[in-house]
Length: 355
Image (cartoon, rainbow, N blue to C red; front, side, top):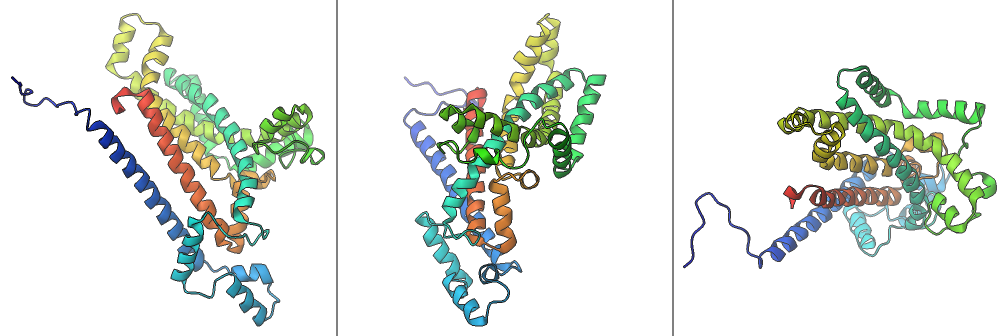
């Protein structure tokens, strides 16, 4: 005889319903991602057409006659109504065709494939430094709340938020490159070593190791260490400040007081109890920081002559090259959506309550 569950008690979902719920949840996630990407493309396309920048002049020049101007405008499809232009662009986009760029005349996909690995390499080194230093620093400041160490960390974090990155980069170049010659100058590698190793991953540090060419590796390392450190300082400031706030909240909880009263080792209370409960939040801020870096650290790439994604996008915006702008916007949207999905997966691994 079946016995009804007590009032107020939630029943466990039927095993046969779980796959359907997961499938429905996954379909909803994919649908939300597609709608978000579509709105990003639509908004960017419309704003690009409203900007007071004429991409035709970027091709023909200001001294071209009217016949040449109209001919190029028709070739670019800019003589059609904006809705028709958008439909043509979506049709090409569905086939993986972003068109050609006005900057180089090559397909947009080829140019992005050339510049994106440089930004990925710079952003990855930066986030490793930012998270590797910022998280322990935030925990250290929270544990020593109100003491000298806490004040020092907070001042350094405030400076990291307040100091302009381009100014810090120029000062770093003057001191560490021009004066001390500890690091490399502009670019990813010395001119002598350009194209010296096969392009396997696009990440110069990795490709040089795969090729066994340590001269190229150390040249690439000398060039990336300063821009990565400049960017990492800002990331360290943000990550350490947020980690400190999360830890302060946990250290004031009753379970921490109880663990201390029971005589648990200090390191176990900090890392085994308090930090364990903020891992989800830390994953979120690290993922957001990494996504921001992948957008392209425009000022840093400009100061250091880094041939990356941000500098490429900025150049396209100046001349109104909407093929490049929309493609880059779509890539940025995909990156952030991918990082959010990765964060959700990590949530389930780190916090069983979210499963």
